[in-house]
Image 1: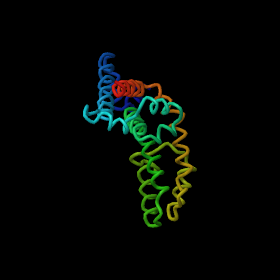
Image 2 (image 1 turned 90 degrees about the horizontal axis):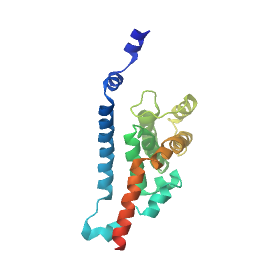
Image 3 (image 1 turned 135 degrees about the vertical axis):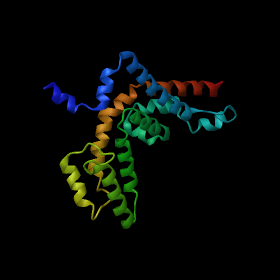
Image 4 (image 1 turned 180 degrees about the vertical axis):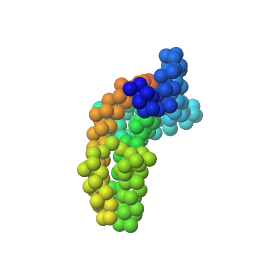
Length: 197
């Protein structure tokens, strides 16, 4: 039995199993520093342009609104960027990429462009073994595959809703309770205090 398990386990699992708890903690710290650097770049200000740039950066109110709903988070430029960074750190950024691709797809007016974009979305996110395959049931995937020859603006609507619900019920609550969100809130609060003084 143990020999069968050894053949199933991946090199990464074996590597992780051999790591000491201190090494695992160090690996986690590297990941935390990576997103912290991305957030610092996002919030970086030049002291001469602080007030001017402040209009483009998230305020404490903005960051608070992100915690109210996934819709509010995704409708804010920096909220969406922060959520993408978080999803990338959790290795599930294909969900937001698929959702965004569907949003772009809905805006397409040209029939030729719509067929091309529908096929690209299918190849990248829907097809079995796609490079960024999203978690969808067989019936949803099948319905999309059948609509590819004559796609409409709503061809991906059911799939997009399913992925949105997955993010809303799974990734979004983890984002709101994450260190990343808390650090964003603290940075926005610091900037608000700097602008007031």
